Amino acid sequence: MLATFALLIHQAFQSVAGAATLPVVPIPAALPAQRSYLIFFRPDSPVLSRRAQTVIADVAAASKRGSYTRIAVSGYADTAEGSSQQKQAISLRRAQAVGAALAAAGVPRTSITAQGFADSKLAVPTGPGVHEQQNRRVEIVME
Image (cartoon, rainbow, N blue to C red; front, top):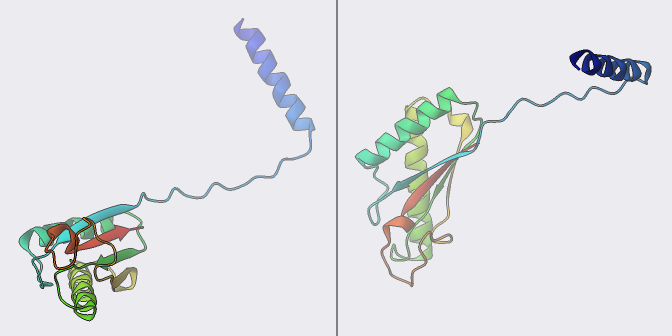
């Protein structure tokens, strides 16, 4: 039975060998999976907590272990953090604080982008003027 199977395999290879050469398509190297992290803030503050420092250390370590070329740092505000301009400013300052801490931890600055999105993407939908910690955040996405 095994000999018959081997003969069939041999015949299959013979027929392929006589056929026109098939193109060889290189398989791209596997890309690292996207990773994301969250850091939360006190109201009206871009100051990093001890927990935030731990997350930043984890991100820096993952950056060094993986093949991540882009790290997007997106800052957000809750609906109680002032006017639209104030929310934009605090969300950007949060993103910049995290970006600077990542750079200080050894992540190349050229791979970090920091943007503020004010209260445009609430994690927890709330009405105007509501403090919600999950909305006062920075999302870090590594690609």
